[in-house]
Length: 492
Image (tube, rainbow, N blue to C red; front, top):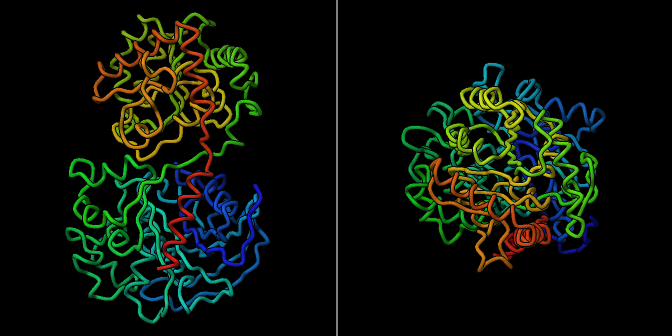
């Protein structure tokens, strides 16, 4: 992907707490890897700021120091900025502070699966440095005009820019909410530790029901707010889906935009995917059957091309609606249908899927954990993909599935409703999957039955597959929309 060069290109600092392939816990890591290069191709001059976790230090052991940072306020420790480049050539600023970031495992959780005790300082520092790079006090020659923040971990950057007049003329700010459920809540004592002034503890500041909320502060002070799908932007303004912040989001509605995520269509391409048993495209869908056979063999299922194979790749959590499936084990077995599950998460769900596999060997199987190659093979080998999420800000796996000619079954929520068009005979020319409304086992089973009925009809099924495969799921259009918002901010 070649970047356009322009003397008037908007300079954007993209701030993220994770970035694939080095640090990834969910969709944010994929977005941080995919959106910046697409922005560069759209003519934006983008630089990524992220903590220098061990994986990044191993990847860039010789990254030179660009600046030493100290006196950042409160209890924020000194740090240094190092320079690197991603494989696609995007500039990368590594915030190196070993006392905060040189830790094993998750960027958010310790070995006991609890939040690191000092997460307020860890991500307060990230936000504070982002604000610094968007001010006249910036120690680098490169000056950001827009700071693009992502989720609560970076949401204090607009807050720092608002309250610290010593920063002088500031960059504009855009905050993307990938999941409103995670809000960065800490005790009042962290206000001083973060170097924020006492008057920031107010309803129009960072105070939220007696807590300091990173996300609430960012939503209050960011110049523009985006979410990762138009549907989610609408939903979070309702009391039912707003996670306690609906009132604030309705108040900021004129500055709130929903932009659907994209996917890496080079990485996720069935015509070139090295993880597949057979590569294929929309004109050669018969080759997909070899991947089904390979997936059945990998999971120890019966080699049956005459039974539909349902696939799940997910964090195993109630939010994902996956608790609906174990209650349907007998009905799924009687259809008959096969099921493979790849993922990890809540222990009760891990045990439930393992139990299904023991009860119905050769028909149901589960791989508890994650395997990148197996994820690609599952997208290609499954006939139908399941995403019964109770809420889903955007979702990526349904787009992977559509790209691979594996029509998804989704609950109509958030980005799932924005990307999956429900099949009916009247809508056969444009449909690409199956939707259901209520988060109940019977509603999900009804959608599965509908999908299997169409799967048994080769001609409409091929049309359904091709409808999904021919759509552009890349980052090109989202990048164009973000570039438009950046230009709007700079021109204000």
